[in-house]
Amino acid sequence: MHKNALANLIGRVYTSALRVLLIPLYLQLIGVEGYGVIGFYLTLRNLLALLDFGFGATFLREMARLSASNDEESVLAQRRLMHSLEVVYWTVAVIAGIGIYFLAPWIAGEWLHPDQIAPDTLRRAVRLMGVAACVLFPLSLYQGGLLGLQRQVTVNVLNIVLGTLQDAGVLLVLYFVSPTVTAFFTWHVGTSLVWVLVTGLMLRRAVPMVRGVTFSVASLASVWRFAAGWMGNSVASALMMQADKIVAVRLLTLQEFGYYTIAQSVAMFVITLAGPVQIAAFPRFSQLSVAGDEEALAREYDRSSQILALFVFPVAALLMVYPWEILRLWTQREDVAVAAGPLVAIFGLGALFSAIASMPNSMQIAHGWFRPILTVSFIAGICGIPAILLAARSFGTQGVAIIWAAQNAALLIPAALLHRRLLRGFGWRWLMRGVAIPAAATMATVLFLRSLVSLSDNRLLGVLGLGVIGLSAGVAVILVSPLLRETFRAGVGRLWAAGGRAH
Image 1 (tube, rainbow, N blue to C red):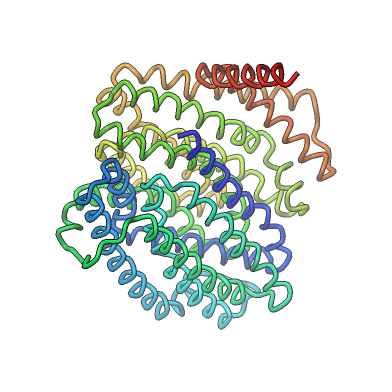
Image 2 (cartoon, rainbow, N blue to C red; image 1 turned 120 degrees about the horizontal axis):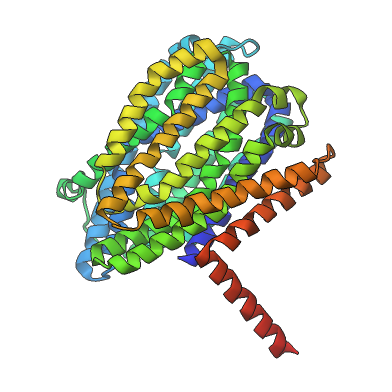
């Protein structure tokens, strides 16, 4: 798990950090309003992900389960399921792409409210973003298969290389060809196609070839229960994670939505940091749940929760304590810091709630127990829609951000049920060792250092200061987390012994 977690950490952190670091350059080339269009594109991609009907996560789970036994029957089942899902995914992608193409005039005219982008340009941009999003749609299937086969290093190498080509390469297009949103999305169409085809090829090479495999309804029917449960979870999550942006883009100008998207993009880095641990832990949870090894399962859960705390708490604390400073140092624009600073702090807290809930939720999903997550997510999502509408009209972007954070806090409710049914007697231990103690240590460290030292306005010195504070908070998490402390002590001991042998 350590190798997979490290690969996921490097891949996720690199690709997400690259996108965040490039935002100031996007703002310089296409403006805040143009970045608001990009924010709508990201929302569209997340909504399209619902059309996989839960088969993506199901494919990951089934590949992990089938890979546990490498006999001929398991290999045949892997190939048959992969081929059947490919047909489903590409069919959905084509239909969705055609739909978005014809809906583009309505989307551009009714949902987006530009001040500077011409209506014709915006309409073309929406059509291109629809094509890009639909071409990229099958990527989750191919990545899920590779992750289920424990090929997480492969997935992350592809993400780093092709993600850099897509996100950094588009700057050359914007700078040398045309600084417009249409040029941005034209580049994304081409690079998305390359990304999907290369990842699909790697999955085909990872699964042994079986001749005569055709589309199988029976293969899909065998996994429909888990897929339906995951689909319900995805819909409920979308209600919570995307409703705010759908409402915001409808009620706000594109410039206001641009500030909103910038703030949320920064804060979502917390959830990104949780992803590597969750992705590495989920296949292992699935395998141990099938084996019925409760002792090993509890041990993996405890370890994963403490690693998660080390990744997310220091960054979340920095976002909540230094939101204005981070935006000012990052973008070098006072208007962005003033408009988006308060949102970063709120989003940082909400993202932290979501990250904390990811580990117990993964445990429930690995056991196929969706009901608590679905119930809480649907209630929070449905209640959140009118709350978001009211908050947007009464308090603007900050009101919407507060509702989003509250919805994410509700995700912690299923954790209590998990520890009563699946890991009995483990709830208090998880709450203290995985949440409360590391959170308190992190926040105390960051607040204490803020009271002693002021960040420099110089970008280099300011970033170095934030790095030192974040590193100090990480050390605090290690010191209060038993498994992390023991791992750190063992690592130092090995280095000391290696140094002694060298002399």
